[in-house]
Image (cartoon, protein in one colour):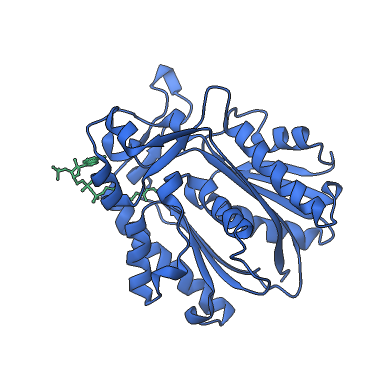
Length: 319
Ligand code: UT7
């Protein structure tokens, strides 16, 4: 099976910084509750001039710039996959808008994919299949969300959790970097939902969530997904240099770390600054780590996501 390598990354955060104290002016909440229950200190919301498309284009532009600084060309890109559950439009899809904005080749596959917070993992898995078809090409994967536009700002149990952002990565085939994955869906979708096109004049979709059910699912799905990946790769947990998981709640990550006996320091966390940005959270984390010099060539990384569906995904990659 084709191995894959992440060749470059990029990200873009939404403009407005919204602190926990700011949220306390919107709903009955407080900084202490949000910090101790989630680890979140602030999040970012898109301004009027921003959208999922502008954030996706911004993150993709950075990733493509970094790709070209490394001596490759955007002309090599054969597919754009944008993971999002909050596209600005249904048609044209976000991937087509990224293709146009970045002047990418016309001969490519431009697809939006929706697997909620597992969307980037879904994109990585799909990219492996696409690179098997065309090993000479590259795949641009973007995770982008403007969740603030589908947030119920009267529901304190959800509105304090989410933020808006986009992250991107360009991947290419690399036989020396085997790629192992696990993905799944298991029903129970009513635990985390966002209604789509309002049929028959129904309400415009807003996020509704049973936080406890999703929490229970997450603390089980992360270790289960990771163990399945390790069973395929034959690697040991202790060989992983970093665990880069969906950034939903610091308590979920510490439960998962404890359940697997992994030091929490191996779990990268930036949710204190951005909140839960769904499909964007893992590529944003990768980009930050990349820019901070935390990722050295040859490191083994374990990625894991979970969320609406309910879905999960995990993957072992070599940096
Ligand atoms: O991307 C995947 C999506 N989502 C997730 O990963 C979320 C998973 N779930 C969670 O992270 C947690 O369940 C939450 C952070 C959402 C909630 O934490 P919890 O410890 O499960 O709290 P809870 O829902 O049981 O609520 C405990 C109390 C309740 O008050 P009472 O009934 O005990 O009086 C809530 O009304 O906290 C109250 N509460 C709040 N208080 C202040 C709920 N939200 C807030 C709030 N501020 N924002």
